[in-house]
Amino acid sequence: MDSHSPYRQTTEKILAFLKKRNQYLVSAHLNADGDAIASVISMGMLLEKLGKKYYMVLHDAQIDSRFSYLKNFENIYTYDSSLHFPIEAAIILDVPGLNRLGKVTKMLPDRSSIIRIDHHPTEDDFAQLNLVDEKASSATQLVYALIEAADIATKQFGVGPGAVRFIDGTFSHHVALEERIAYFVDKPAAKIFNSAYTSNCGLAIAISTKQTYWVGDELNHNSIIRAMRIANVPKQNKASMAFLLTTRLFCLLSSDSISRRISSLFISSPFLRITLKLSRKNHRFLSAAVSC
Image (cartoon, rainbow, N blue to C red; front, top):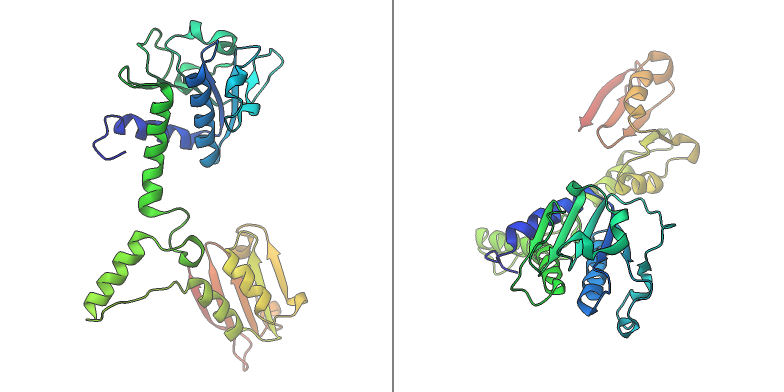
């Protein structure tokens, strides 16, 4: 779907909505036909890709087995009053009015948490967000438009943090930066690579001795955790602490009675990294290198 798609603004709003909630009811009209079943399943697959939990529920006591070849068909529930799911929002497909939804209406959250995707003329204004196009061939076509919109950023920017190239791969921005660097230095090509992870591990080895004490925050990045493991610091000199307690520990260890026993200390947390060195003459902390 390009930037001129007639659905662009609506799909962007729906995708923003989907990011804010985690538990979804997905349903379609009673006497579900091929479009209803296919749109429910495809919507569920999109939610799964987005890391959301979803529950596909239809009114029908028996779902048309002609469509059992569709992936995840067996995961569709038939409505039963005993069904209880922690639903935060609902996505209703191929349904112009609530009277066509059947008993599944009993499971709906309030209007502000409902999305409707349909190609029929509207009968009830029961949803907060509506992706409706009467000219569309099916509800499944509109779900595809939503999937395509969600995929644009993936195609352009990739997935994951992006900076970690050796994990997530090469994105268009990596290539563009390399081309600019090559042009700047007047070379036919250039290659960039990430070094933050390697730097953390290298620093650990460089500053650590058998007299080093290393205290890490339990929420540290994996590069810090890995650095602690390879730094050759004795096991009894290493510890993990609860989030942000490392800052309080820094103040405690600055006292003379404790600082006299330590030759080198590395305290690390997501918000504070401190390396302390002691003077051999007066056993006081000479320097503190802090980065936030």
